[in-house]
Length: 94
Image (tube, rainbow, N blue to C red):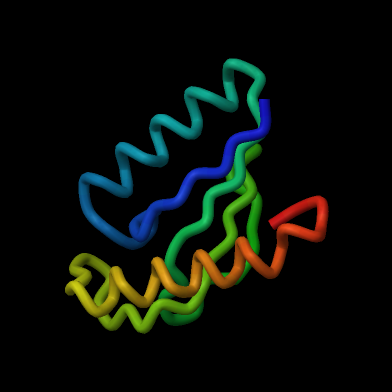
């Protein structure tokens, strides 16, 4: 199954929620699923990478701190994510 995970925190940024998302994604990959994670871009992290068989896509969100996100940062992530998904609907990948 192809699964898209949306989370404003994914390691190396975020706290416990990001780590939980990572653990769940890795568990699903071990079960044979294909995962893409759409998450927040921060500083010099790559916009696209592949970690443990998981496609990581990072979008600009205005995040200013690695371990804390305020409402504006989360809203920026939601806006960027929906824009990215809408733009990608006509393509076969995110």
